Length: 114
Image 1: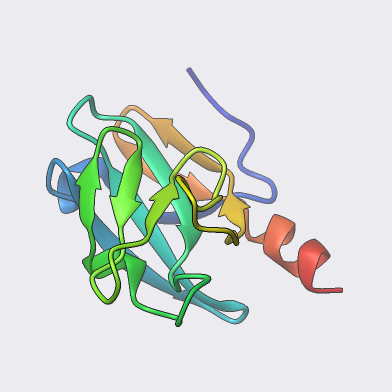
Image 2: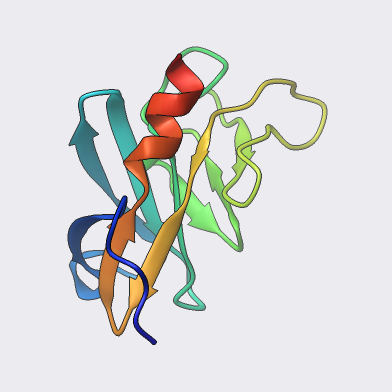
């Protein structure tokens, strides 16, 4: 499937991210954590926990969630919201997988920052 390239920025290949792992992408709006689940789904969220700013890209991926390495908050990769009794959220960033090539929509971050 060929996605429109306008507004989408190439960030690498899915093989650059280990299963149940993450990579960090630096953008003018801040760091973005790009995750790959065990089922090869790809998600992108801001790389800081809403609790104390921990680096979510260094957390443990399980299902479609990540556990922050600092204080064990669990964040949904689908919604960016803290799960369980914790409250808070991070922004999600649209990500596309085109035959293994990954793209993110940075415009969504710029629009949210305005």
